[in-house]
Each structure stands twice: as structure tokens, then as C-alpha cells.
Image (cartoon, rainbow, N blue to C red):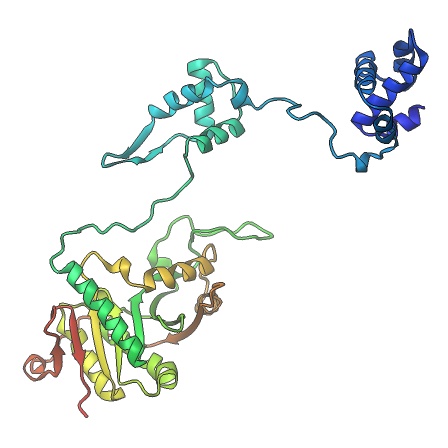
Length: 402
């Protein structure tokens, strides 16, 4: 009897014990409890359950195997959740968090707390004498819509930039025109400069041993520098990264475009009559400096294709498509890896991809670029850069000589 009893699940054990006790009559519950090694309360509860069932149901339940039984306990059984049994914990939690909460005065929905889970648990115990686990604190945070988030760089520092909206409308119009004409639309920018060497980099990796790097990031210990100048083809979802090892100059930016055009652009767009480049207004492609325009004109004369530039307004560089369609994926592909050599960097960047089909091609431009160059004295008077009638400070074309 005991071996059979132990082969059943919890509900069937209870009912089996009850049936055997009912067979024996007076004193049967105590005797069955000793035989089966269970408590008298279990036998008594099983007898009550069996007494209220029709005979055919009792027989069916007894013949069931543990795997065939769909329900073991009654609905609502088991220990109740802490938040259900102690509803006052909500107000206590909010009082603790409220003392350490900041937010946006213009938007009451945007708020955050600087307390960690264990600090909230300590504060509840200290202030209210309530001892709760971190798991309970997580449930409270979730219940009251607190989520673990990081800040997103999406708000421009200045919203009242003159002609800001007009330039965005103009860029949208240009993109539509170039797309209909079958001409390439390229987003261009230079990613953050990195140093080669045994330096710390953000991110974690699965490793067999601990990775040890220098305790200071002094550039004097660097073995070199890498400057990723990037292009992103909006239509094909392809990135092109030219890794420089010298300086980020306008000449380097134009050499980067030259390599893209001869290596990929002229083959992908053999019938192109113009190339639209979207970029910010600073750095090597500054909208205010004529040196970039001079190098751009030389480039247009060489490739024989018109190059149209559309700069994003000041403080709006994060709206450049390359910033959120290419750069984050390159960062993710390289996170945590020590840039010990140029080969390591190029291999990592080349592996960048997404489920939506992003591909990246990498090329190294190992050329020394001169800094401090000056624009030619006759360039401004003889230049063939054509400025648009609409916002000429941000929109212009380099037309080839032929």
C-alpha cells in the first residue's frame, strides 16, 4: 500500500488515503496514517473530498497516473504574493523613492531615482521596519513603472537655430529627387578616433582568462591611431569605412570618397549624374571653411561627376542617418575588444552586420596628411563651386570642369 501511495501525486495520495480510511470505519484514519506514513490531517481531508464525489469519478481519479492529472491543487492555493498580503508596502515604497527622485520639471512622466535595489530595501527596513528581498523591490519598481534605462542623445542643444527647419525640408526634398533619379544618396561622417595599444575599452567579452590593460590611457603609450571615416548608402543599407592612420583632414575626407567611388560607387551607379552627400557642418568637412570646398572641386574634376553637399544645421548632427544606422552597430561589433593592432580593428569592423541586412566594407588609407594647410589664394575668385539659392551656406555643388 505504501509503495503504491508513494507512486501517486499529491492529490491522488490524499484521496487514496481517504478511501482506505473510509473502508475501515471508526479508527481507520489513525491506522491508515501510520501505514502510509502521512499525517492524519491528510487522511481526513482526502476522506472529505472522496465522500463528496460520485462513485464513477472516485474510481476514475484513483486510476489516474500522476502525469494524467491536470490539477493538483485547488485554484488560489499556495502562498500568496508579498505585495498582495501587504498592500501598505506600495505607499511605503513610494515614500522612500520620492525622497530620492528627480525628474523633468516640464514633463511629470520623466522621473528617475538614484537608489539601487539594495538601497531601497535598506531604506524600507530603516524607516518602516519592513524586511524585503531585492526581488520584492524589483516587483515594486516594475509595478510603479520604473525601468532601467540609459540616456539617449536625441535632444538638440539649440532648437532655435535659424533656418533649421527649412534645411531639414530641403534635405528631404533632395533625397526624394536623387532617389527618383537613381542617383546615390550618401551619409558621411567621421567616427570617434581610437588609439592602438593595451588600453581599456567599454564592453564585456566571454574569455578564458582575465583581460588586463594599462591602468591609465596616456596617448604617449599608444602604438598608433585609427580614424574611421565612414560612408553609408541609404538605398542599399551598406557601410563603407576608410580607416586612416594620420589626421582627419579635408584631404583625407576626399581621399575616402575617392576610394569609395572607384571601388564601389562607379560600379553600383554606372549611370549616376550626381552624388548627394549628407554630412554635419564641422570637422574635416566644415561648411564654413573653403579648404574642404577646394579639395572637393579637385575631386569632382577627377571623377567627372557632380558632387552635391547638404550640411545638417549646427547642433543637429545626430539627425544624420549614419549616426543611428551605422555607427552604433560598429560600436557593438568592437565593444570590449582591445585594439592591439590595425588588423584587429579592421577585422572587427568588417564583421559588422544586422538582421536587416547591413554590410560593411573596410579599407585602410595609410597616408600621412598634412595639417595646417591653407586654401589657395586664387581659389575664391576662380572657384567653380555653385551655391544653391536656398540656404547657400549649407547647400552647394562641385561641378566637374568637363
